[in-house]
Amino acid sequence: MTRDELRRKLLQTRTQLSEANRLAGAKAVAERVGNYIAARQPNDKVAAVFKSFRGELNTQPTITELWQQGVQTVLPVLHPFSPGHLLFLRYDANTPMVKNRYGISEPALSCQQLVPLAQIDWLFMPLVGFDNHGNRLGMGGGYYDRTLVQWRKGLLPKLRPIGLAFDQQYLEQIPVEPWDVPIQQVITPSRHWNFC
Ligand SMILES: Nc1nc2c(c(=O)[nH]1)N(C=O)[C@@H](CNc1ccc(C(=O)N[C@@H](CCC(=O)O)C(=O)O)cc1)CN2
Ligand SMILES: Nc1ncnc2c1ncn2[C@@H]1O[C@H](COP(=O)(O)OP(=O)(O)OP(=O)(O)O)[C@@H](O)[C@H]1O
Image (cartoon, rainbow, N blue to C red; front, top):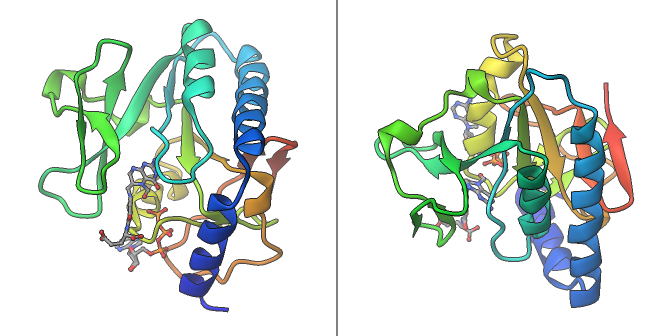
C-alpha cells in the first residue's frame, strides 16, 4: 500500500473507535505521560502539545496533567508566511485562541508568546500511524518533518519528540520517504514504546 492509502485506512480505523475506547485511551495516555514527566530533571520545563481534531486521541487530559505538574505548555501555530512550517506559542487557560485553515484551534499570533524550539523539552506529536522503528505517518503536510530537521542534525539536544496515538495506529512497517525523521518514543494507551 502507498503512504496515501495507508493514511486513509488508518484515519478510517481511527474514526471507527468507540466513544468509550476514546475516553479510556485519552485518560490512559495522560496517566502515562504524567508518570513519565514526574521523573523529569529540574531544568525540564516546557512541553509542546497539540489540540486534537477529527478522530485524534484527545490530548485534553494530557494537557491538564501537564498543567497540574507545573509544566509550561506550547502549541503549534501554522507559520503566517513560511508554508509548511510551524511556530510554537505559549498556551494556558487564558490564551486567546483562533481556528487555523484546517479548523484546528491554535493560539492567536503574538510575538511575545513565541517559544523557540531550542527551549522545548518534550515535543508531543500527533500521529496517523507509526511502526516499530519509530517511522511516522502524519496528515501529509510535512509540518512535523520540517520541525524535526534541526533535531535530526543534533542541533536540538534537549528536545525529545514523542508521538501520542491509539494502539490501533500501529503498523508493521510504514514506507519511508527520504525526508521522514523517525522518532524514538510513542505513547499509546497500552504502552510506552521506545525505539532505537
Ligand atoms: N491536532 C493537530 N494539530 C496539528 C497537526 C496535526 O496533525 N494535528 N499538524 C500536523 O501536521 C499540523 C497541521 N497539519 C495538517 C495537515 C493537513 C491537514 C488536512 O486536513 N489536510 C487535508 C488535505 C487538504 C488541505 O490541504 O486542506 C485532508 O487531509 O483532508 C490538517 C492538518 C499542525 N497542527
Ligand atoms: N524537511 C523538508 N523539507 C522540505 N519539504 C519537506 C520536508 N519534509 C517533508 N516535506 C514535504 O512535505 C510533504 C509531507 O509528506 P509526508 O507524507 O511525509 O507528511 P507527514 O509526515 O505525513 O506529515 P507531518 O510531518 O505533518 O505529520 C512531502 O510532500 C514532502 O516533500
